Length: 262
Image (tube, rainbow, N blue to C red; front, side, top):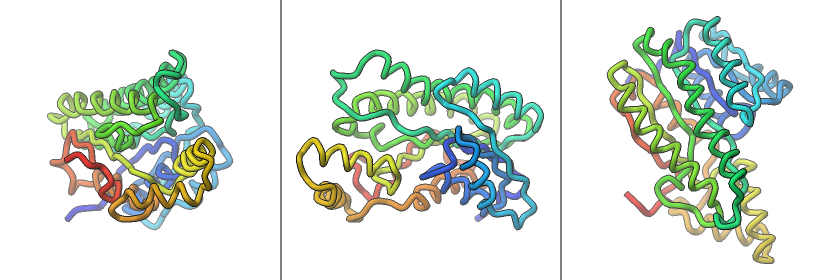
């Protein structure tokens, strides 16, 4: 099985913490040169220093704020034109705030669509010409299991994530002939600031302890625990390798068996 990413360049979004950081570390361990993208430069420098370099990789970072997709596109497009090679793109952005969908304002939907769908689309537009030139491309979107089963209390997120999954499936059909795959990784409850924020919110609304709420959530998962970020990253990293060349247009749940649909 060919898992070697030596001489491959990866761009990983939202890569200073959580799943994004874990993906960046895993890709570097497989030999890729990694470009981190996030808004906090100090954290970017810190994570860049943690990336594996034994294969002679040249790691880098871009400071960008995903709340402004057009500015992100200009920055990334200028960067890749100078670089002249990109083989892997990992689209990853933190989820929108929770709440009932009926209470969501139009601005909340617009902000979420910009940060997720529009950013993913423009990032893809920036790198695809170089992937076509290389005859090798892997676009991996970190989304959520809500694209298979909407999650209660995450109305805006459910809506936006579903749109991203449909966008990705359409893109997979268009890019498949060029040796470029487009796949989605759907994390379930994972040990990140996002899940602990949801635990805290649910506990506050129900007047219960965070420990009780977390135990209840874990009990609903066949694996009986939350995932480690590294476990989600392993799935994303595999999809980036030559071994995954014939996997295209899939939405892979990494959730310990929680999702009830097939």
